[in-house]
Length: 274
Image 1: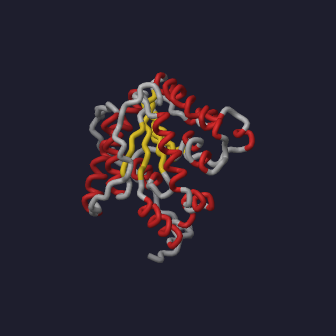
Image 2: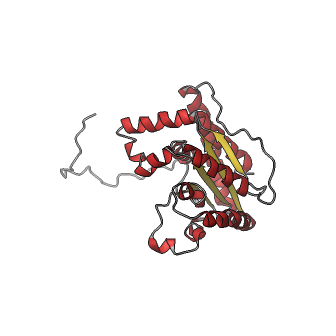
Image 3: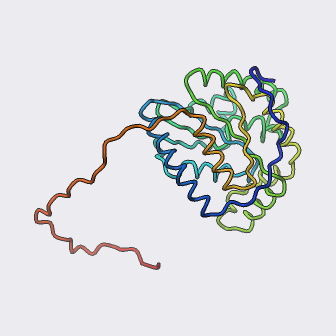
C-alpha cells in the first residue's frame, strides 16, 4: 500500500443513472466551458503546471471526456498526449523515461490519454512485461509522482469505470459505425475477452499507487454525458483557480478602402453541395 494511502469505499461497480437529456447536458457543459476558460487564463497568467491522467478500459469514454474538456480552450495551453507503442529505442530506456518530456511547463495543462500506467494495465494483462517489472513499477511510481507534485505540478488521476454490459454495447457500436471502427484495434478485441484479468490489474494498480498527494479519482462512466460533466466539475473543484481581470474588449474601426477594388481574378471556389 502506498504511503499516505487513504481508506476508500470498496464499491467499484458503476452505478446506473437515468440518461441525461441533450438539452440539460449542453447547458451544463457550456457553463463548465466558461469556467475552463477562466482556468486557462489563470494557468497562463500565474505559470501554473497541471497534469491530468485518464485511464480506463477500452470504451470507457476517455477520448470523449478529453474532447469535452478541451473543446473550447487553446491547444497552446491544454495539450493532449496520446503516445503510440514504444519504439525499440524507448524499450531499452528506463520505463518512465519516454513520458517525462511531456510533463507540463509553466502555463500548461497536459492531459494524458493513457499514461505510464499502461505498464500496470495492458502491458501486464497482455504479457508485454514480466511480473517482476510490474512490481518494480508499482513501487517506483509513487516516488516519481511525489517528485512530480513536489516540483509544483498539480497532478490529477482519473479512472473511468464502465460496466461489462455498457462496454459490450459501445464496442459493438464501433463495429457497426464507419465513423468509429478506427477506434477498435486487434488489441482491443483481445483485451475485451480478459475482463477479470483487467479487473485484478486495476485493483492492484489503484491500491499500490493511490496516495494523498496523487489520489486515484474514480468516475462512473456508464452515462457518458454525466461522466464528462462530473469529471470536469471535479477537476475544476480541485484546482484553486481565480478569474483573471481583463480590459474590456471592443472591436477597433476598420481601415478605409484606400482605393481598393475587388479582384477580377478567377478564384477557384469549391462546389457548394450543401
